[in-house]
Length: 100
Image (cartoon, rainbow, N blue to C red; front, side):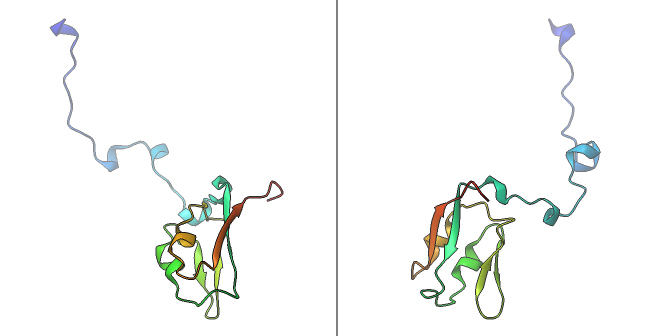
């Protein structure tokens, strides 16, 4: 059985990986919003512009326009962190419609 054992090689570095294993485009080209089941909706009457939603968004899908925050649904995965962190509960997580 010892004759069938292959020598363990050192782990390869990222430069040794085949090209198919590495992204070759900018991440902005990969729209991942279609993964979500819940969509965050902002009630602008309640929003106090504290920007905590923007700060905590792991996907950077929330943007500040200078007047209000807006959600880029192309990249929002519906994790709900923005709604959880909103101190005035201005963000509600609603089921994603089948119409898109």
